[in-house]
Length: 228
Image 1: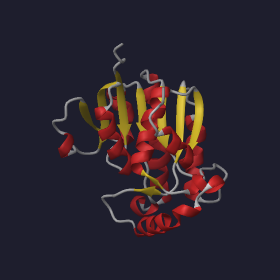
Image 2: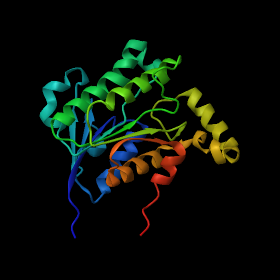
Image 3: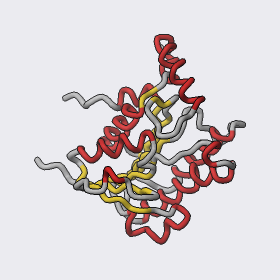
Image 4: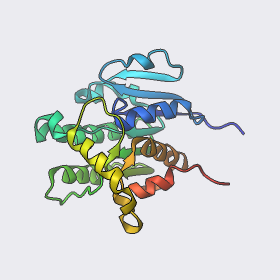
């Protein structure tokens, strides 16, 4: 029986997880088209069959709502305080933009939303980053998606375009300490962008109902091919 051909939309396609996810979905048999929201065209994707690049202005998403029509929305938006410069800018990128995208896409017919959050997300946290991720999660749950999957990876491993000393140092330590992260500690183990992307893709095909949160150890399991 032929698979139903869906449309996927990826926000944050140029990021660490987003890049891997884009390449993965382009090869996935479930999708006839992959839409990526970018600030400027990505040359290597220019002539890829099945991929459509949409030059997006997140400050005016409402004006582009017809280009946000898809079945499955994958949101990989996120930044650091170093890149954003201010907490206000960081909040807009990590909270306001994902929420606006989720709202418009839902109104345009999307039934599934998958988002990269962060381990320790908590709207009551004293840590700014953890608090805004928690706020994003809470508000997303109120939009009304049939399926909302929130992934909370621990330290992400992979090659970024920009150098981040803290993450590079953390990655080296994480690899060395990996054998210690067993049992209940497994959720704190560093995880590769490839595993996160694979997990999100496979979760989307199962389309769990309601709001479901996945920690790093659960993403490791979700990324495995389904057994018959």
